Length: 379
Image (cartoon, rainbow, N blue to C red; front, side, top):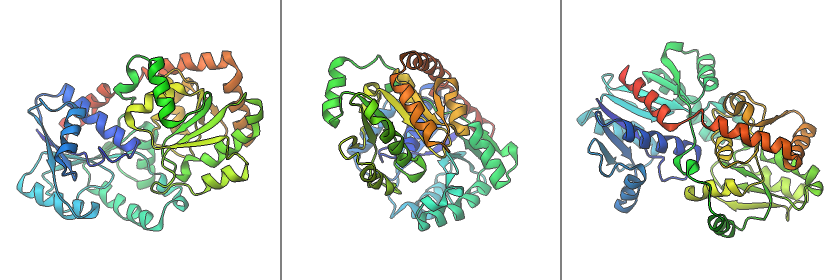
């Protein structure tokens, strides 16, 4: 087969979505030497493209080719640039995320990965223009797609239920932690270098991810404020781009309202190569999301022997299982109590670390790539 994959997210610092497409492509390259792959991107810089090839480990793979396509913007990509290319250079299967290309021959089978459909339930947190785009184009894309792939059973079920789609058309794969998280634990020198790079404190509770409103960071700040005086000079570190797309403007206000200007630290975006070390430096990792399709960061924290506290939403219970402690989203008392417990109770911490390591082993990008390849082959 000739398989086209949209890799535009690689190199864009989009955290979760980028991690998925990167690791999926990298592992497809490791397991499939038979099919031909065209990796489509809107990046034209030769140096960046060369670096992407090296990172994906496809430099010596003759069946993998990066295809840069110049386009005016992301809308033109799906409406004009890519369809024009595929008209002259058709593929058997085209794989993208969320929005499928328009005006593409029905002979080309399209598979789209949907990470979550949170915009349908938390539309108040999204800019009107973005919400209009999603509400309009997602249903059309799901109708055009020959196969829809969720990133958890929960997401698969949500897609089927909300969009009333035939279950036979929807499958699911699981995400996993990247290779950088499965290497040997960082050395003392590596830990200190990264600590200095991001000016991280000696002991801290960590959140790392996007800062969209559905990530529920203000509630984390409030929970931390309740117990900080009993936590032995522990700080709260919130990693992510405060000025990023759809960033929660309430985060800064919450810090001021709780008088935590000196207790909450914002290192900004964490470079991918430093992520595992930042997790390893943390005392506790907290993932307080209101909604997730999968949620990779809890597994990343578990891989670095860090106890994890999560909100009690269905997707996180499916993914983290008994490897994390869960708090009731409706109760700030429960949140702050469990944050205190996981910070000071060594027996609880050790048990969560043990179970977390076991849970990480349940997921692998190789298994995910094998299932994705099987989906291609049945289309």
